[in-house]
Amino acid sequence: MATGPDHGLKRIVWKRITDTIITDCRKSEVWKILILDPFTTKLLSSCCKMSDLIPEKITIVEDLFKNREPVPEMKAIYFMSPTAKCVDAFIADFKPKPKYKAAYVYFTDYCPDELFNNMKRSCAAYIRVCKEINMSFLPQEAQVFTCNNPGAFQSIYSPNSQDKKKTLETLADQLVTLCATLDEYPGVRYKKDGNMENAKTFAELVDNKLAKHYALDDSGTKKGKTQAQLLIVERGFDPVSPILHELTYQAMAYDLIDIQSGTYTYKAKDGSEKQALLSEDDMLWVKLRHKHIAEVTEQIRKLVKEMSANKKKQPDGKITISSLAQMMKKMPTFRKQVTEKTIHLQLAEDCMQLFSNNVEKLCKAEQDLAVGSDVEGVKVKDPMRTLLPVLLHPYSTYDKIRAVLLYIFSLSGTTDENLSKLIQHVKIEAEREFILNWKELGVPIITTPSFFPRKSTRRDRSQDQTYNLSRWTPVIKDVMEDAVENKLDTKEWPHQSECPAAWNGSGAVSARQKNKASAQDERRSGARLIVFVLGGICHSEMRCAYEVTQAVKSCEVIIGSSHILTPTGLLDDIKALSKGPMETFTIEEKSNA
Figure 1: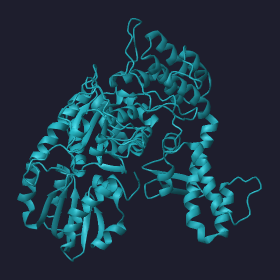
Figure 2 (figure 1 turned 180 degrees about the vertical axis):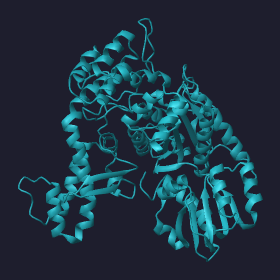
Figure 3 (figure 1 turned 90 degrees about the vertical axis):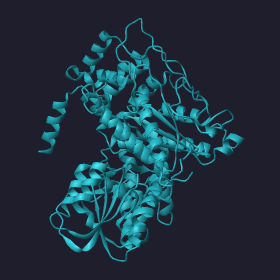
Figure 4 (figure 1 turned 90 degrees about the horizontal axis):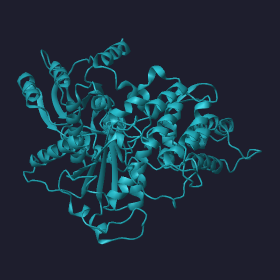
């Protein structure tokens, strides 16, 4: 399936906005002002540009919470979340004196009666339109969405959390708006876990809210289940993938380079600081992001060489940043294309430099610990022998913590005595929470000699072609493939609600049987598998959604969570789990000061 700005969630979201807000705009010839809150600003900027809004007679975009000059002769469109803060700011625009001629109000989700009545009482005379468009999620990529809530991790997993129930409710509401935007009423399943109840609780919430949403459908007819399945799983289900050093381009870049809000900052040849946005508008990024770094560097150099084929080649045949700078001066017509490729050559070089300096040696140990065998397929009998060289080498504290965790995960827990020795080795005696707090996610850290947890069986991928330092496959990929093939065990993955007919029975096409169709496959053509991970998703798991979709073709896989994880960000979140509510509040106060 094609990916990019013209396909997938971003296109669907923009179409939904066009069909509601923009269509209403077109009914009136006058120019309007668009007013957004922080969430809807992110939502709109994820799927359109200002140049898309100007033809629709939207003259300016303003922030709901900032002081704005009154423009009493113009109409205003309010696209906002249904919260008391947003409604209060809206009312303040019309009381005591109106800032605008009229208001067209669009809520991202269901507006509670209390807020709606408050608006009606205060400024009904100015409201021309008031609609709920059911869209309170962020389309991050063609097949990836988030709920824009990194704080959900603490709320769900901290033993001191005071808003867990409320957070799960909010996430469930957001997930329902995703289903509504896709026009899907999926069957719901969750991963059963003896120690953790979050997935089950969340599945019940989502299923009840879906039933309520479709019972209240505008058409007046009750919607039946569609050809979709929704799987809910907790972060502790696969603790390995989010802390492993990944060598595919996107995951590697976000792990090793400080990329903030999708923006890569780098130094140009002249020493000036430049920024590049890594988004689906950059088709080279879309093409390369899931490829192994070895392929990426090769492909970028090949592309650059093709562009400079009519120029004298470098003596050693190697393309460098400085040679590209020279090329740009000599080839003004190619300047734009070279700039795009320069960004990725720079980013790939940054990644490779950090890889060769530190990460390369780490990766072998990490892969052996994660997979449980070495490159030749020989089982790792003594994981401590694999870990020890990492502890003795001057790697960063975070890298050592990641290796120690992989060692513990490989054994499904270790003894208290052994853990104390490991913590001394890494010198984090005062910060043991980096490791101990994984227990809050249901991941065994401390075990007794009599305790032998059952390790789940993995798919056999021994025949798959992989790089030696990229042998690990995220567990979620097994789940996606098993779901598509109708092989998920109902004891491990109970049905919260009835499953659509296309997801029942046998005969589903294998993700590796690319050319063999079946009646099941035909029935399910255009079906969707939606996977929601409580507690964050990592970039390698995002990649799996595209890989399985590409292999199966009859089924689109969409993955989402509260937020997207990076390894160090996750470790910091894990460490913070044991902080009390007051401690967290104090830190927030300081950071805002």
